[in-house]
Length: 152
Image 1: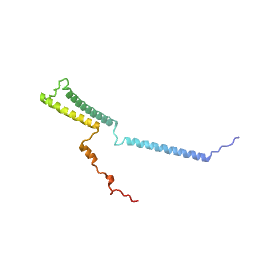
Image 2: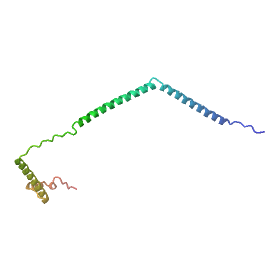
Image 3: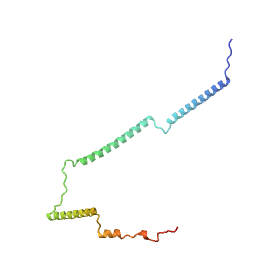
Image 4: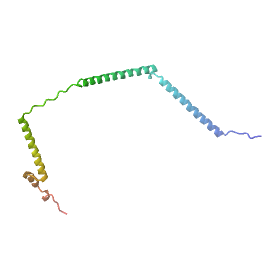
């Protein structure tokens, strides 16, 4: 005859504890699901028919906005195309007499000569008497005895 097997009491208790935790977890999940279902069917939510109607209303509003936008664009294009192919009026140029033309040419020549003279002067690095005097007549601040303090 064989030996009689006895169950380990600690193992049995652990198994029962795990089953209790598992059943409690399943119960909380079920209650959470039920609460969620009730919340979804609550007063704040729309039915499927109401949601569908609201969606169609939004689509109609968007379509109307697109239609208005297209109409504005068409009007702008028509306004732009109204002058297409037509000759543009050229701006009128005032008439200039021979004397006025000669005077303008002389003024341009004087300005050009002045520019050439200035470039030559800059190339030679010469200075006028006024320019030279302004650069030479600068006070030498290094010779002021008041600023030097040579006490040691």
